[in-house]
Length: 440
Image (cartoon, rainbow, N blue to C red; front, side):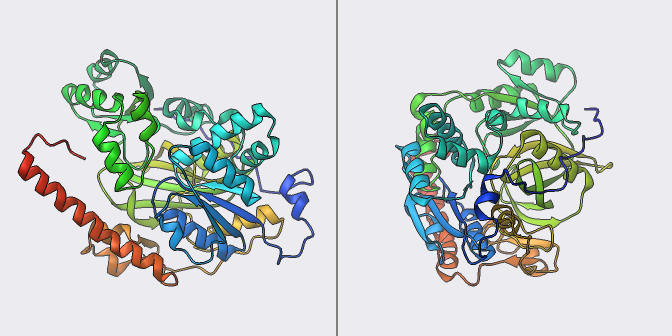
């Protein structure tokens, strides 16, 4: 798609007297710690790593997560509340009210959707304090719906001069066929409400597109949803499965190139700190990264700043890109309206996101933590090790192991045994049941 020059971002960050948090914290002793509530609905390691980094930056950290979550293995978290998959909004609302937080940070897409729903519910019922905190933490509420609708977001980004691939909603197979007839293959199909490589299919033929569309458009299957909930502690598909809710499917032009990703800390539309990476290894096809290289990329930075300004974003937000083969042009392909697995990293001035948020909340100058390594290759723990324990980057890159958190490390190491046990049980079941056993 033809691009235009991105519109300038909102400018240099500066808190003004009217900012709620700045007015509360301005002039207070630095020893008085602001409070942040970390919200997680699935058992990823990123909330645990972020909680550690936020504590190091100066925050008092509390969290809400399911029982058995890795966040419960972190030393330094003041208090934890239990997330209920059956009563999600009630459990999150109670945690927000009990924590008296100055900032709330979602760590997965379902957590973000819960906060969006709470904002709508509480603003309509007159609970303005909770609604105000969510708005202050995430950004302008009028754009809450757009960050979860892939096509609408891409159209908005294009309107801001950001280079994006052609994207549209597909309501029926005939529409997908028209794309294929126009010679646009390969194509990428993406379902709204999915993340981390889930709900994405690359198709090279019309027949593949028909099958992929039916799978992505169908409600989640019971056995797969049960596996995600029990093994992965991922409750996102539970409600769509129970309500038999069909996903909105989007078709996107394929960009041949290298994957890249960004994460920004921002406040009221201004970018405070940012991280940009080229993806070197994936955990699975179309899934999240396990090894990354820190880069400077003017186009990625301009796109992130433009979208932060347009959406008046606050908190932590991620963006995924494709760097076109041959030209290196950066195509924005989606937004992650929450922190990602790199949010905890301290990589120098302008690249320490927790420290930037602490500065925004307190009105203090940003004081980045010491850089964890001068090596630009970041090997994520335990993702890279679990995916491929013989990966050469484990020796040549900076292996991001949380050495100061032995309980967290132990739980991550044990997760390999749990995954192996699950896969072993699957092999036994397939031997007994045969090829007809549904793939979980």
